[in-house]
Image 1: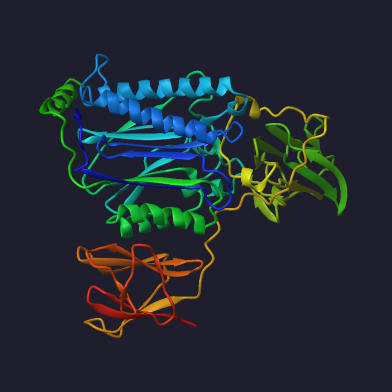
Image 2 (image 1 turned 90 degrees about the vertical axis):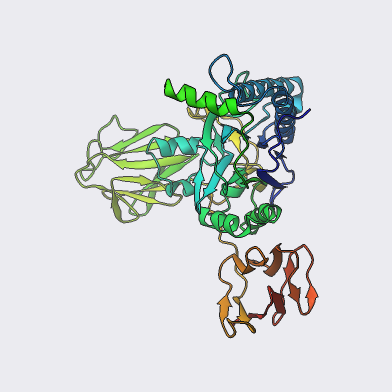
Length: 279
Length: 231
């Protein structure tokens, strides 16, 4: 019996394309509006085994989290003080990492395979964001686009340490080198963040095949013009990335917040306010 | 791997690979690139390399460091930049990282710790490589000839709207909205919102994008307009 049904509050759309240059699509996407979960993974490595890694990521996260959150509400506090959502997401990602890593060890053509990951779980009145690598989450709110995830990439580290400016980054030869990935080592360091959610928000998960081909202004324009028709919006973003060259696989997941998210049960909100009083 | 070609008076003196994190340039003997010339300071400049990117920094030299004729303090080196130290010229060469095929070029790869400390080039023969042009920023999509719509009925009759943006929204939000997409291959009308679909030359379009031809008549939210190509 499903405890969670967010489909009245949020709408999702996906589009994933091989692009104009590559032979294979090694991206994987998942959108489960009922559960409030969206996942995007950009696979790499092995002998064309990137798609094995990325589809393992979306499949395992999709099925495990559905199972866990229908048994126990995500907002419920766990023994550690964190929310169950945080614990579950961390745990499932760790297990997915182990599964991909083991698969990579087991077959020669899978050696070295891995994937980036961006997973968003909507619950209560917020969104939990887990990411590894350089696939991104953006949020459009009040006409303003904000990149919510910071890339785990060599290029980002160069920007953070002041070696290079964001404008100069366009000319860097160090593009596409991630400093973290899922499935390439026995353990993984997942970055977790939580953000508030407001009706009218539009979230965009995308692989670097999109943001490498399109300027932010064009992304804002497309989201603003077409958000009323989400599947068309997703298809149009991919089309524009391909029109600009389509040099990589390009995938997007869009989430539109139509109404305030329902609180799973009153205690969730009450508990959070209690905790915040005690700091 | 990036390299420098040292020359003076157009005579090539030597080729220097940039295989260290820091490559120092100056007159004193301890420098990686020693240039024995009075116009060059003892410690003149340094090139810092992070994998495939290199940065040139002047070390408060007496006569300054110049790139392509401009004096610099710190400069992000690009393929074919010419560094000037006194009478010496150092041309920076950095063709794209070697990949077997064009398709591999944009592939995401995991950075392993050993990649930053570049080992000396092995003596063994390397697999055949293709020299590719350096990574360019995303190309602007090639543009079709400029299109426009001329409003024929309603309160905006006579108004002309040039289709300069990649997406132009038309219609009445909440009632009937369509979008004209400007793509390299032409202009496409797509239904976005509303129970009824726009008409082109009297016939309703389908769910997919409809390619517009010069002088097509569009009817949308009760307004008639003509699409045409300018110039």
